View 1 (cartoon, rainbow, N blue to C red):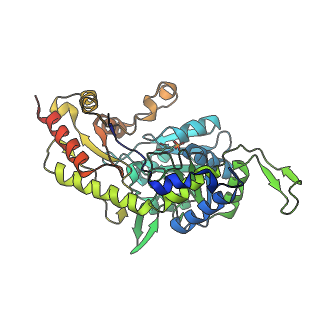
View 2: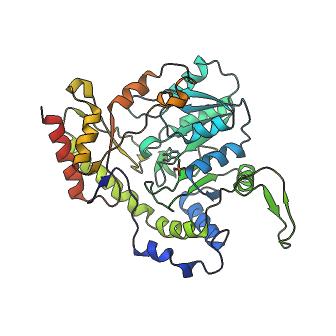
Length: 383
Ligand SMILES: Cc1ncc(COP(=O)(O)O)c(C=O)c1O
């Protein structure tokens, strides 16, 4: 039975061919396909340095290590976020502060970031992490101004936004080009813009950061160029490498990135057309100068106003073999973090009470989207 998920990978015959054993010849890992994948990404994204790694979570860990985040360093993150960055910062014993989000987009904004700094009287901030929820990369130039003003690092958790672009002064920049961030991180998990199975990336224009990233990605080991037997460990590191197998798939998938994002944009347009006249639904906000990767199509419904339960909507869709989702439960609502986070994040509470992520990915047909909209209307209009 086919289940329509909110997100899914799309593999074609070229991708399956890329996974054939003869592709790898000598190397299954640390081979030439890793370099090739990274070079292709460099060209596509426009950052000076790209390092692949084993997941988006690994990418964040590498990013934090490469800017030397230490115990008690202050790092600010949005309260609505995938849990990776917070879990890692917790492990690293950083002092984590949370910024509320914009009630419309669910993203931290320059305003909520500044409020967090002011409210908590933060004199020295080591870094803040932006997250482009759903794939719409907002405010990065303004965030970058703040980063310069308070002299800290800015990391973009761009896991939702590979393939996205933003325009400043009539010029388009690719998300990840790091023109307005110190480091960008990406996930290559199957629901993301392209996939390598599991996988991640960090991009930067800072050579020092990149060198530290490479060290941490691979045990802190350095090798002499021509004498392979001469190696040394110059700092602690882990094994966060991405294998040639994964990179071979990545090389093939990357060729389809534009196609995938175009299709996601097309699906978004269909949703807009089919849902625009439904009062109970608030469609995603569109912003001038932003080309979204449409990782998620998030609609909002004021469930208390229509006297229905959000959980009933999920159950209703499941019966129709459609798995919608909610992104994300605010971090201060998770059991582990509940008592560790102080403050009231008003917007995040409203946001999570309303959001539903509808299916959007390359394999969705027009018929699928029409079916999702039809069922949504049935749910809303049935007493
Ligand atoms: C915003 C964000 N950051 C980080 C991650 C972690 O990526 P991965 O699952 O590849 O570790 C995800 C994954 O869903 C994500 O959505």
